[in-house]
Structures are given as C-alpha cells and as structure tokens.
Image 1 (tube, rainbow, N blue to C red):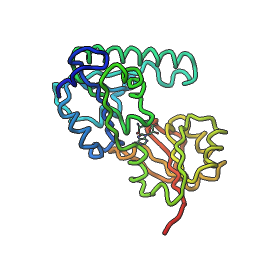
Image 2 (cartoon, rainbow, N blue to C red):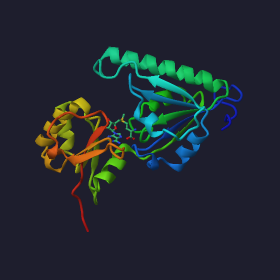
Image 3 (cartoon, rainbow, N blue to C red):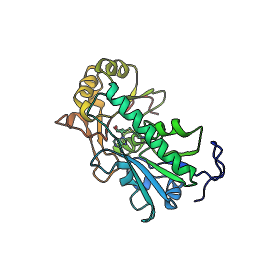
Image 4 (cartoon, rainbow, N blue to C red):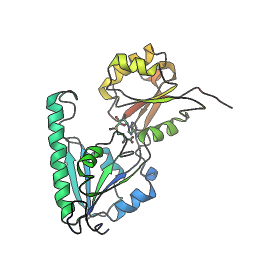
Length: 253
Ligand SMILES: C[S@@+](CC[C@H](N)C(=O)[O-])C[C@H]1O[C@@H](n2cnc3c(N)ncnc32)[C@H](O)[C@@H]1O
C-alpha cells in the first residue's frame, strides 16, 4: 500500500491511518475490505491490556505478513480506578495523546498504519479517541465491521427485533437505577461491558421484568464462545467480552 499523497497537515507524502473493523471474533466475519487492507499492511497497531494480547490482535492472526511491524498500545490503566475518577481520565487522556503523537510522526514520514479494532470501530471502539485527535490533521480512513452484538444475537439463534420493537444498547457500567429505568423503556436490549457488573445487571433485569428473556453470551463467535439463558448461569462471574441480549417480542407474521 502506498502513502495517500498530501496530508491535511500540509506535509508531502504523508501516510494514511486506517482503522479496520475486524468483526465479532470469527475471522470469517471480517469484511473483504478489512482483510484486503490487512494483507498488505506494513505497520499494524492495536490496543491491549497489560499481560494480554488483545482480542483484535487475536482475530487478525495470520491476516498480515510476518514481517509487518507491530505496534502494541498497552492501556496504562483498566479497572484499577473508577472510569469517572480524575486518575483514570488523566491516565487515558495522556495515553491517547501520546499514541496519537507517535502515530502522527510515523504518518508524517509517509508510512501507512493499520489500527486493528474488534467489531465496528465507531461503536464503543478505543480507536475513536485517536480518530478525534488525528482526523483534521491526517488522512484517516475507517472500515466498518460486523459488531459483537450482531455476531452474538445471530449465534444465539434469537432475532433481536421484530416489527416496531425499539432496541436499547446499555453499557453494564451504568448505575443500577438507570439500567432499570432504561430497560423499562425498550422492547429489546443489548447490555454490553458486563464483566464485574454482572450481579448488578442481573438484579436490574429482574427488577425490570426481563430476566426470563435474557440470554448470556460470552466471547460470541469466538472458538470458546458460550451462549446460554441467563437463568441457567449459576455464577455472576463474567469476562469483559460478554453481553446480555433481550430479544424483542414484536410483530410475528
Ligand atoms: C469496548 S466495547 C467494543 C465493541 C465493539 N467495537 C463492537 O463493535 O462490538 C467492548 C464490549 O463489547 C461487547 N462485545 C464485543 N464483542 C463481543 C463478543 N464477540 N462477544 C461478547 N461480547 C462482545 C462486550 O460487552 C464488551 O464488553
């Protein structure tokens, strides 16, 4: 892949920053476009937690050449401090500033860079923080992907919305009272970011009267996928890559 000509910051032969959505986990659910861009990558960057490779990097296994330069971007903090704390926000802001600067320097030398993103980049993706920092100064192209929730409801065998059903996507990180309130206002729901919020989410679903329809999905479409009715899940232990689906009950013709 060659550089994309003049960047918006005026430097000649600046490279292009691509972010490729990789789909929910099964590599075959990656788009042809993402796979094509990856196959000629010279530099691949990806986010990961300390001590872990990251789902995006795992999904992309074997999709780019072995001599591709890899740039792992390790989050400085994940669950050590509350998301709303100054400690968390300052650490993440400095992290994204630093990574955006590093990528900008490489782009300015004419290199193209591919950032890997699980699911769809513009749907709760970390890449969005780099995008906001670089989109006005550099060439940035984003390739959409099949979302985790789409892969998960398909593999669950339960269509998510019928007729006029209104679906809500709720982060499990919300306070319990807000979860209950929002669950009461929708016909179908997807609850993301379950992890250590599982017990709270289960209580909220019970209060909202949705628990009997809820389906638990862990690592949907990945090789170690687990899907079961939430009622059958005995513990409240859940990994970060899990979600709960509440299929709608709208018009069946
Ligand atoms: C930061 S969001 C990223 C969403 C991603 N960009 C997408 O399009 O699906 C991470 C959350 O997505 C959900 N998620 C994404 N893919 C999943 C999968 N394959 N199985 C279960 N949950 C998934 C989990 O709830 C996880 O906590």
